[in-house]
Amino acid sequence: MNGRANESKHHKKKKKRKRRDEAEQEKPKETPPTVSIAVSGSIIDNAQSLDLATLLAGQIARAVTIFRIDEVVVFDSKATSSDVSVETRMNDDEENERGAPFLVRILRYLETPQYLRKHLFPIHKNLKCVGLLPPLDAPHHLRKHEWSSFREGVTLERSPSNTTGTLVDVGLSKSVAVEQELEPGIRVTVAMGTNRSLGTDCMREVVSSMSPREEGLYWGYKVRYASNISSVFKNCPFKGGYDHIIGTSEHGLKIKSSELIIPAYRHLLIAFGGLGGLEESIEEDGEMKGKHVNDVFSSYLNTCPLQGSRTIRTEEAVFISLQYFQEAINKAGEKI
Image (tube, rainbow, N blue to C red; front, side):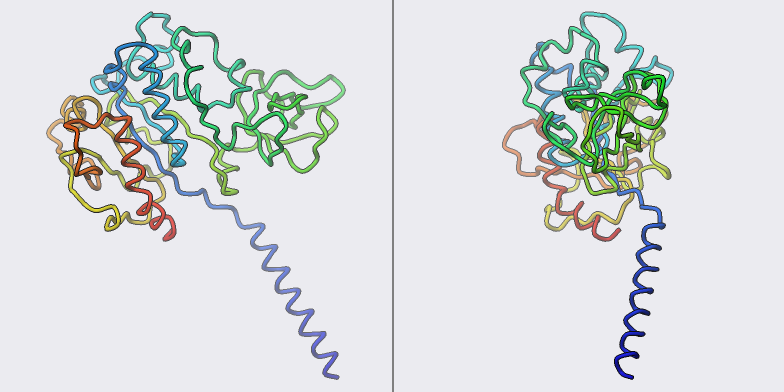
């Protein structure tokens, strides 16, 4: 009798566990919290040559990759919202492309896996020195022999006439086929599954670029252009905008990194000024007339109060500050 009772209890527990597992599978995954940085494109104007400007951009790219930053916003200090788009300016073949368009170009190029660059980036004079930069070696920059549950790819052409879908170059020895029918030349994230056979025999699926992040993977950074500092906040791509914004400056509040508290956030933004600092960027933005830094930022901090040099370059400040914020960011993430 006891044996039957125990068996019945066991089956009930098993059913409950099964229902719980099914409910968890059906429950949509929450979008993970994001950390963004905003950088003034004017920092490029401080570089004296193409190779030094490229090196500066490479240092920014390395910093944001090391510290798992999700978005880099490059803003113009003096531009107005009516200015032409950065894409238009990047397509301009002028010899002296500088500032924000230059920084956007290099950051996007470096974030792109090496095997996709030939498809997505035409030859341009301002990419001449990128070969001097150390690779980002981010998790999505996969080698030909590496297998991963996701790979970045670029659409090539429709699959052969006897099948539906699109061929995608994902950096392996053969292209793979995906179920969706897409135009050529589009960068996509492909869920590779467990079947390692290549070609058109096994159909894969194009998924959201957020899918790897939902699985706990760091999958590179997005690059966004803002015509001025107010556009950094106004054109935020995340629902609800940035819920905590930090400005960095030597004029900011001095708090030990171990004592810093960042509230729980969905989308955090850390801003870095250009040659004249964030104060100048705010003063020159017509949409922020009369505003003080304390009106713009949730907190305004000095992340290196004991500096020995009179100046800290922005590419140095990014490294210093992101390390300074690490402990507070991790603690805030645990609260979510």
